[in-house]
Length: 191
Image 1 (cartoon, rainbow, N blue to C red):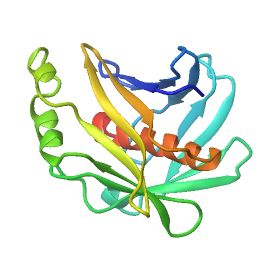
Image 2: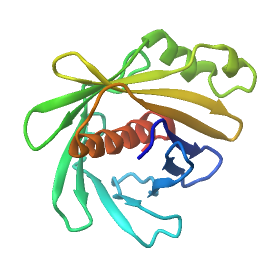
Image 3: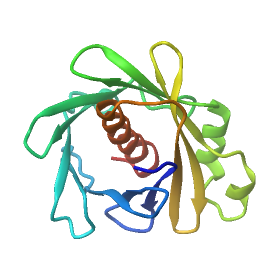
């Protein structure tokens, strides 16, 4: 995988189209998800034809704002989970990423005011282009930043640039990318 990655979602479709491509334009994965009230499962495929299943993301849906999303591979092996840390809010976003135990990684927005402004005017053409860009940081429990994801607004399609800030092992990288999918689906598209 060559960084920076680009996460794309189209906002004009009833069923959001979410994909991740690397710096050379190669598809890393594409998400098949239909939002529903009962918390349907999101399937992550390796190809646009959706013939090669890579991951399954399933929520526990105890409560909407504190749902935990479990990651499994195509064979049903657990890869970890992500959970929102507190209620959904205009003021701050925090997620905790777990690897079968207590959280070892977290996601937070870099600037709460930027998130608020993006929610209010971020999708308005031209106006959204002049406000500061929405940025999320993925960090380790020791306080180091591992990944930075920045919104790059486009008309009819939004894009996020994902940059690696530190070396990450492959299992943590997978959990981070799947967690970023949940972040974007819940914060931008509404899962």
